[in-house]
Length: 154
Image (cartoon, rainbow, N blue to C red; front, top):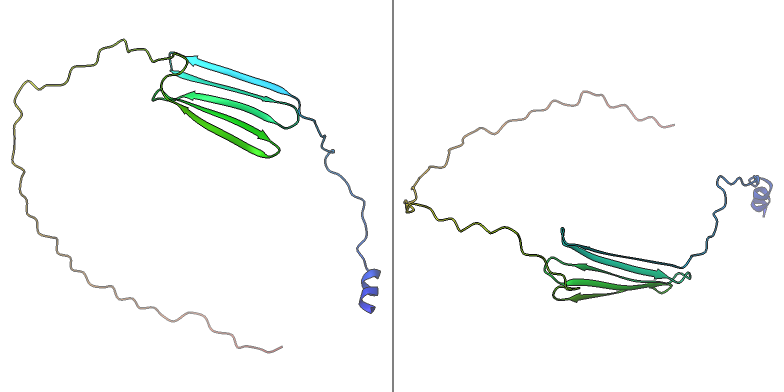
C-alpha cells in the first residue's frame, strides 16, 4: 500500500497534446467508368481495359492482351468488400479479325558454299599434368604484447 501511495504522489505530469498535422479528411468514393482500346498495326500491340466503380467500394473490370502466339488473354475481375476475385481466360487464335501482315521482304536463300567442305582428323594431344612442389609455410607468433591487470574487488 505504501508503494502505491508513493507512485501516485510522483505520477508523470499531464502535458497538452499538440497535433503536428491537420486532421485527415475522409472522402467518399465517387462512381467512375474508365476504358481504352489499342490496336496498333505497326507494333502489333493489341490490348484493352475497362473498369467501373459504383461509388461504394465495388469495382468490376476486365483487360485483354493479344499474345505473341496469336491467342488473347482476358482477365475479368471484381474487387469489393469481400476481396479481389479474378478469372483468367485464354482465347486461342487471333481476336477481332486481326492478323499480322506478311512481311514486305523475302527471306534470304539458304547458304550453300561454292566449294566442297574439307574433313580433317582431330589433333591428338597428350599433356602431362604439371608438377607442383612447395613447402608448407611455417607460422610462428609471439606472445601478446599486453600485461594482464590484476583483479581488484570493490
